[in-house]
Image (cartoon, rainbow, N blue to C red):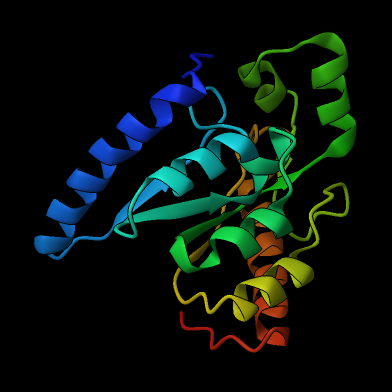
Length: 181
């Protein structure tokens, strides 16, 4: 993946902030999505981006990508909760992730082999009940999207989408969120 030296984050974040402030003036909120295979992938890189950018730069917190990159979802959510304006809820199969690391698979190979799954899948390792409580604590209000890049031949899309939404409805409901839609 491409890597950006830490010393370049302030300038990059300043440009994003300028753009985000312009977007805000047009009535559009900016959301930055950290992602595997990009210059903002790890928890440290998310921190650098958020530390050096202005309030207009929102954060899309992706539980699966952050976990895949070795990040701490709970700590990152607490640290940047006021800036989170969109959430992707994707789970990680830790046994597959271990194979990714052991065999030095590419991100794409990991996806093909099933590293991602949905909330509620017992093979996954992310505690969505805890995550939803933390989001409530930090005052999050917005979308929480069920997401998992999976091979539809291995993971029936309707079955897994239903599993994911069922888990998120329960987790966010228990945390005290009003669920719309």
